[in-house]
Length: 148
Image (cartoon, rainbow, N blue to C red):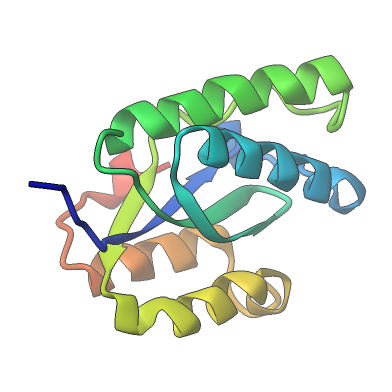
């Protein structure tokens, strides 16, 4: 029997200490690189975007790939790429953790729009407010003092 899945993951993580170092002029290069990582892992990328201090990835994971391994691979490889290519001179590291939220396929178009409009969204809300809202919407218990 074959394996069939349809689980959308929105993966969110920030730069170390949420420093606003992901300069707009080189973000597309970073996003293309991460898209290549996902393609090489047989994961389907629906949308990637972000702002100066964090990014969002909407993807479907291949059934043989674990979420934690994928995020680790993305963070390690992209950090190395950023440093080798000198994309963001002030970038040092990604934050140590990440958020991952699951959605049904019916939510796909709304999520794509949400991720596509990150710059507009962050004119009203900062990353901390957005992240707490995501945790609350997904009924994830947390202590704010350990979030950032």
